[in-house]
Length: 239
Image 1 (cartoon, rainbow, N blue to C red):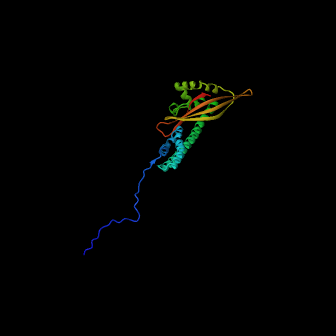
Image 2: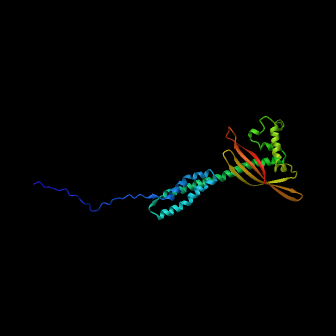
Image 3: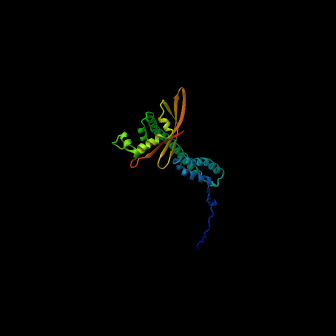
């Protein structure tokens, strides 16, 4: 007799637990922190854009606090990366600005101080050369006296330059003066680096001391066709 065996469905001792995958949406501030962190490289371009990494650093702890109190949201790694990028780019932007400001100010002062020495020595033609750009300077092989004698436009420009205040009063001083550097302001655009140097001209006359502020605006531009740059005295203004 053939034994008839029936297939019975075996039930395991431990019940199978269905694994439910729960989707957790990102925390909005975490996403914003990461986005601002990625945009923080803009801080290298302009000081006004330092606000981008600053906002990211401020939002970071707030995002982490909200994530700690709301387990239905994710984004902790995004917040950490956003803050790290913001701190790195923000520090880079500030250090670049400070070092560049110092370098430009130092370079501008070298030329401005040399220019002031020429004025005090009454070497006005040489001083005027530092006012001109490359195409306005004495051609190679020509003396400076010959240049101003034969080029009426250059001679007229020199007269007009030194006839304006405060230069007119400065070049006519007969008593010794002391010129003290006070501070500098730096601006940059597409074509020029501009440094405004604030000086104090101190005069002593008949036992009394007088002072007069002047502002020398130096500009730096690239020399066309080369990798060099050139500084020149753009203008001089009364304080």
